[in-house]
Amino acid sequence: MVEFGLWDVLRNLLLAARWTLVLSLIALIGGALFGFVLLVLRLLGKKYINTIIAVYVEIFQGTPLLLQLFLVYFGLALLGMETSVWWSASAALVLYTGAYLTEIWSGCVRSVPTGQWDAAQSLGLTFAQQLKWIIFPQVYRLSVAPTVGFLVQVIKGTALTSVIGFVELTKAGSMISNVTFKPFLVFSCVALLYFVICFPLSWYSRRLESGFGGA
Image (cartoon, rainbow, N blue to C red; front, side):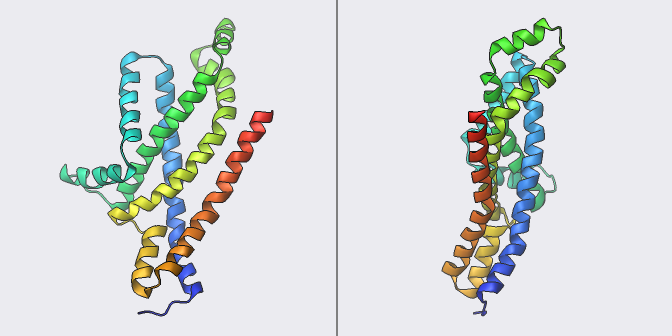
């Protein structure tokens, strides 16, 4: 058994926590860009495009993230494609995040009164101008709080990438626990770090929601 003090455990977990944050950032940025493209395609109103997007969203919302990670990591390898843990974890989380953000933002668009669309059309604005100047500013107010709140779920979801060998916070905790034989101490520190990361976001999300609700 290797003798690890509390500081040794925290120091090693903090090093791993940075990869949790990096992976979460990749998932959020990639998923947001992908989700935004799908949202715009949905708003174009093409039936076959909406059907494809709906199927994609249902698949990723209706299956566990753990299964999606396995399918991306092992499935692409079966197709003869070279995959890495980093690439597979990032791709799975981007697809997962994109599906949820598409649905969140679509719901926010549906919340905009139809009269706003009619008013934008009456002004002779193009579709792009309607979105830019009339619709999206209202969607932003409605969507920012649930988007920030969903980021918390993404951060916690990165823990599942440990099953394909990605060394993030949870995986590092498991490795340290196996070496030190102090699972309670190690995973208490893991839980503490997740709380430190996620609580400010949860608090900020609730503050945004109450602030916009009172505006």
